Amino acid sequence: HITLDKAYRLEQLIDEFFEITRYNLQTITLTKKHIDLYYMLVQMTDEFYPQLAAKGKQVVLHASEDLTVFGDPDKLARVFNNILKNAAAY
Image 1 (tube, rainbow, N blue to C red):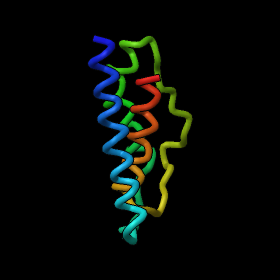
Image 2 (cartoon, one colour; image 1 turned 180 degrees about the vertical axis):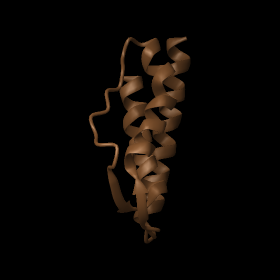
Image 3 (cartoon, helix red, strand yellow; image 1 turned 45 degrees about the vertical axis):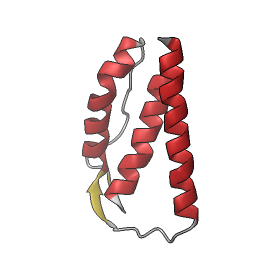
């Protein structure tokens, strides 16, 4: 089971490496708009709750409910997804 987990992690790292390489070779286009960041973070922490709880971890969100930001929602979601994924893994 540990070996399989490490193989999956290695696959993820390789995929991320190739994606970073692709980003370095191209211009990243940001589609900016107003985002309800609080709602996005609540959704993401709810999504990761089972993985974190299984490892005895939890996410505590200290943010105002009216937290908004002007940015690219897809890119921001990816950043926070990676942070939570790493928190669950380590």
